[in-house]
Length: 285
Image 1 (spheres, rainbow, N blue to C red):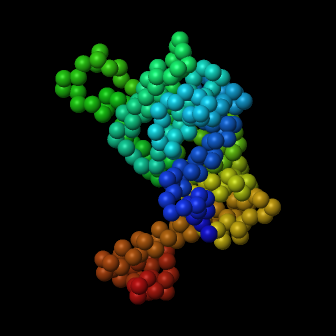
Image 2: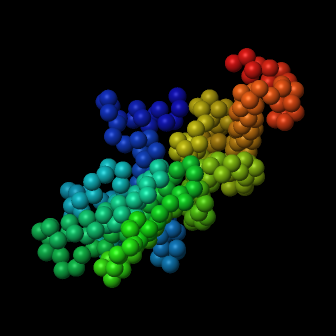
Image 3: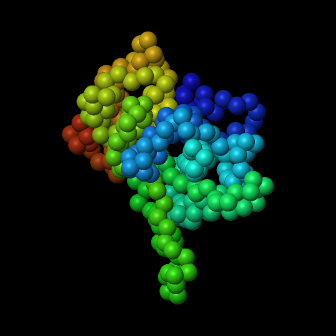
């Protein structure tokens, strides 16, 4: 069974409201050490190192109802000082800065409706964790979303959302779990196969880290079991084979395209590096 299937079947019933990617990320970052490291490293650039023991998972029954509507959001309250909002994103959204602003202001505004007699409101720090397969390359500021012909910049200040882009941002975390988790996914997305089996951190990877990363890199269960021993994935050999599998797949796709153009079999064999027999087999499909 693919690990994605196990996430889909985690809840009983016909409808699963959280997709496997968000469910995976919620499992990873419900761990307070992981959550603290992500915000310390990406949002605060290590100028503020959050103490995981001072984090508490947001719960409407025990905290103020901040009006966060989406189940995919992960919200923590830090040391009775501020809220930290983590937004998971797989698809590119041109209005993402507006959405994040809406969450932030809804969270702040909702506090004035509580009966807690707050003198000052808790700020909400938001971070978008973008896990799409291609670089974000999209709007990150409020002003990029607004028609500027008659815009008075004194009316509303600009806003730039904080984002971690798995495709291009440096993986500079204190936590080894996050180092390994993000590196596997980033190398696969960037097609840097050699890094997968030359990176010393990935020589051996704990099974739970690889299972979470595998939601995004899509290796089958048989492949994983083949290279698992005592709860650890032997990454060097496993990912070397995976890289070769991906390279072969790419050659096959190229050969199929060339066949569709009516090119000669021997020419396709020379150009792709596939054997003539392999090309002939593809031509009969």
